[in-house]
Image (cartoon, rainbow, N blue to C red; front, side, top):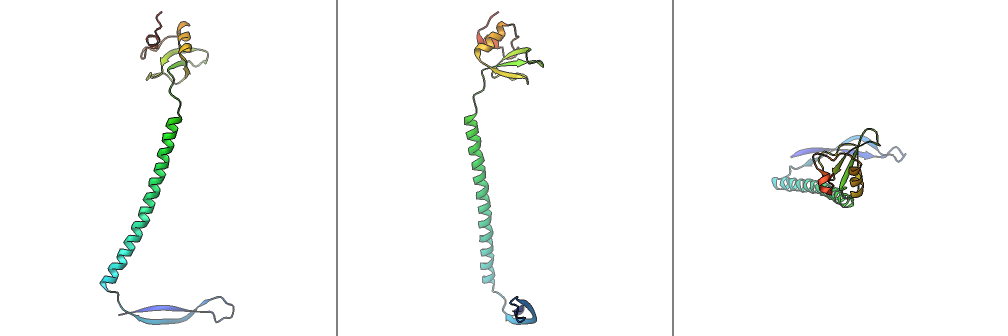
Length: 141
């Protein structure tokens, strides 16, 4: 057996605001049995597991939304160009012509159509030595 101490609330001041009375109430409380403690522990674990599952479900839903957004963005992305024209520091200066899948097209590049790539090669713009767009275009000097 143990004792539980409580506080008596009272509103004797007449203002309607409760205030703590300095008098304590003592009552006798019996110790809970092992079975009651086990049931209590089970309720706590179920409550925590439910909260954790809710949190994980939220994470899953957020990841599914992000994945769907990535898929939509991938579907909306335009196809890569078939040809690149690399420009020099001066935008009027053309440096090289590249295939669309070239691994070294340079930083200052613009997408080009087949006709633009052929015209650049006709104007003696050098072809990339790595991807050989002149061979892919069938352009022989």
